[in-house]
Image (tube, rainbow, N blue to C red; front, side, top):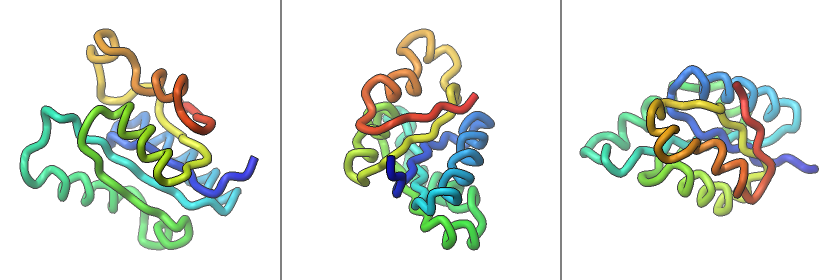
Length: 130
């Protein structure tokens, strides 16, 4: 399997930070480009939220890491599961690396795990990180 593009969905939780660390190592090993995606839920659409998310994304990697890993970052609004899959298809992602738990809390019980849905339906392999 050739890995040229790695996607890391981030919600700024400890779980997604661990997934990011793993993805950075894999990107280094394979010489792959690293894609960071933050998805904002529809209920949280206030003005300025995109700029906040973009700012947080930029701080996840040093400038040197951004250049070395050919990093790209994006913010999407909507259902995290659907936005992750849509981005993976659009960007020809070869591997998704994501945390097994995010900020969902009780939402996991009510609507199911985003990671679980992504694993079941992604167009590419998915690595989950505890």
